Length: 239
Ligand SMILES: [Zn+2]
Image (cartoon, rainbow, N blue to C red; front, side, top):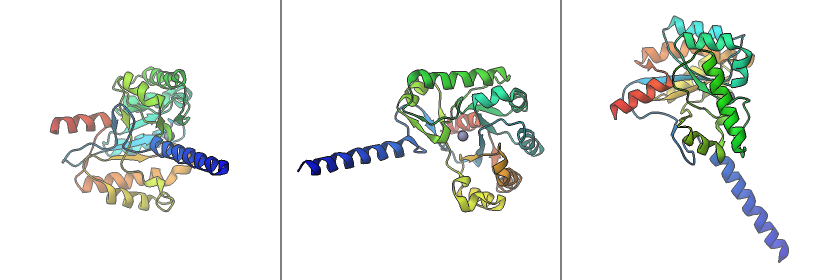
């Protein structure tokens, strides 16, 4: 009998924990506060978003591609990397792109203490401001994970959590080639989509290569590129 109870208890805890784990990374759900994974609108507008960095190696390559096509994008940067590479962060800002907060240390923001959460976000905001960026600073959680303290903190701080509805690199068979990445995006894209790409590390050569292709194909389909803040404003004006 006792053994049975133990098994039942262990099962219940396992189910609860795996439920919380799933909940913590849901793309379009957060316990409290404002979350955007895509905006509702009928116009062909999209936002390109890049996570991590800025890095010394790849920031300029990405900025050059965007400038060549007159596309504005949103860079979710970590505070520690902005402090390490302030000139790169400044160049992103002065080129007119949006900078977002992707935490300071890129730790999973699950079961963190309030002081840690506050520190991770405030230090990163400060680094972004030091780089000369003056626009709104939204937040994107590392690994998309946001549980318990984080959402409450963000709500109190008046920050919106920005997720995404298109993530080509999540699928191994897609991430391996620039063509497959761009095919995936073209199949999934809808008006108001938020596209997530990683372009700041050596391992993401195919993602960087896909940029050119993705911009070209989306423009050909009639899509206009907005920063995340512009995309949100665009949808608000329409609804
Ligand atoms: Zn990240």
